Image 1 (spheres, rainbow, N blue to C red):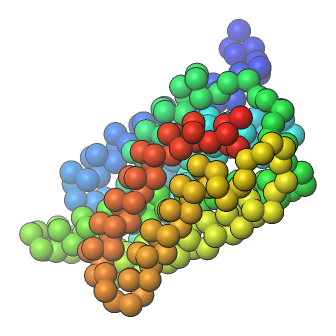
Image 2 (cartoon, rainbow, N blue to C red):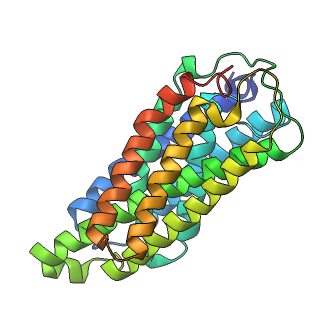
Length: 279
């Protein structure tokens, strides 16, 4: 019975459920790290994320194999891909001990998005339209979802920056004993992540403009594309003012967190309003 449960038609959802449960355990464990001022190494949390990543990758692989394409055809698949790209980036950055705490800030987002993505209404039967040709669709979807994942890590790095800055201001001993990087390094990390995500978002939007699809919807006048273009402008403005020195590290951190919250809160609504992405 257990074997049938895992290899059944909907096993990708079951595997994702296991991954989300581990994200939840990681989030709970992260609370203890926060309360202790990050004065303990978070290898346990890192391996929790690694375990979740294994189940998440298995689910994504099964989903993609069953449809023989990049699994980003509906909101469930897009959320699955988004959390997967965020997790793998967290794990890669966690190979550097000073950045391993990124997972403690990212796990609440991973858990929340994972729970949301498991809603049955987000995974309706697939339709044949819109039909894209070539591998440009996978490039378009992968680069944009990876960009969103990196923007999430920008927000996590910014939260680390603000936490460490608060500790330096009100509890210098806690800041000194903390395993977190210095605020200067966190500022550089968040800026470089934002720049990398911005480049990926630019590539994704450009690749989408090259796609051919059925229907009368114009790509650059479509709801989801206009929303993505708005995000592009906002992040471009943040980076421009940061490079010019107009935005300080603290204001830049608050800006990255605020824009990512906006991204998460409006992603579902704009997707549902999109005839191209939600046929």
